[in-house]
Length: 238
Image 1 (cartoon, rainbow, N blue to C red):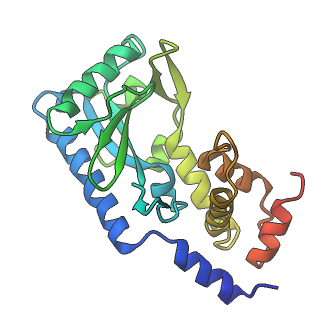
Image 2: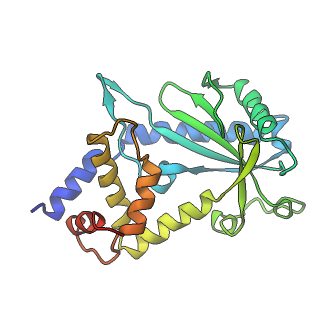
């Protein structure tokens, strides 16, 4: 039977290092500031925020493959003044053109984002659109993510040639609320399950981390008082 101290020691071991956290912070701040102040893009730029496992604090330290440390993934949402009348491919093309002026991009354009390559991290920049009533003057630049979670947002899909509904702020709020309701058990349990998944890979590397996170959230007993109970109960049918 593993003790709480043993679980905590393991969680400390798989936590991203201070160096990794610093690289993530510097990289994402650099991209966000660049978009905010770009001479032309700033006219359609509203604000940006960090999303994904880095924002939800469910990321583990990068794995080492053949002696080489993998780059952590960083996801940035850029809220724009684009509308549903704009073609997704055109929006992504414009964003790619702007970012290419300052950063090295992935060779193959992504379906819903623009990929940036740095020496330390890999970044996906995803443009989204919000209801025009949110950005028509006067726009509140201090709008919080909790406020934004009340609205349906859209991300472009170049292959489908359409805008798809999404809500990254709602996902962030969901993770924060669930972690609080479970007395801080949710996020560490996600980290443990993600690490187990890393150590037991499948042929097609599925399910991905986001899906695992959602599965843990749906199945976790918020009354579990130990990580041992949380992991055992999580294995039971939801």
